[in-house]
Length: 219
Ligand code: AMP
Image (cartoon, rainbow, N blue to C red; front, side, top):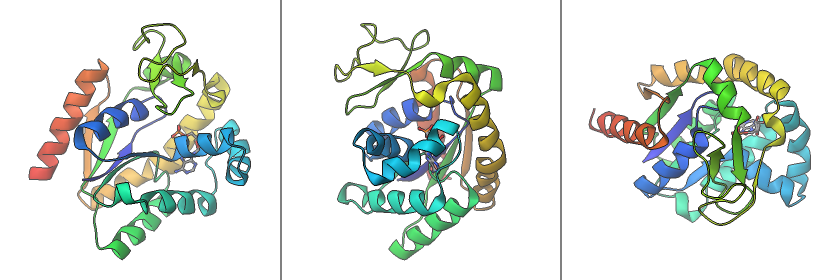
């Protein structure tokens, strides 16, 4: 399957994407994770992206689209992928359509994770991420690791993202409403959007998402 995951910052896209990708045996492709990996490796791309990310703004399309395209061209993504955080504006959605058309393939679904704004702020404030390869996402209250500060999946150190500060979160939410939300209408016209509530336990949301994807596949 080829799936796009959308939702505001803090909706749980990264958390859900990891489980859904595993259940569906497709790679989880997160442009945010790719940028963070480039930053920690000190690449030119990472240097270009950093200031935008720290400010809560989108990294320019010239940088983002090429990076996403390179990742999708890798062999593990030939038969499907779960995109998390890409596309994030209508220009990127159009570029993705061109890429898919060139390959003669189509998206199967756009999974829209819905969550109220006050919940988003609580989720982001407690979010902790693994520095290791698993890039697993935890929450100090809602999804705590077994040992504080340590990733259950790979033993990596957990940290709080620089752009999870309150001020940056406000900017990210505004960017989501003005630039990313319009892609939901863009995909609705194509009949691809499935909206689910992202409230509740992580496993319950995953089950809800799997059911919604199954139904959309049958439909
Ligand atoms: P995320 O991990 O998906 O929350 O992304 C973190 C940050 O990376 C965003 O706030 C943006 O600055 C940048 N970013 C991730 N994906 C994209 C994208 N598709 N387009 C532009 N910027 C992005």
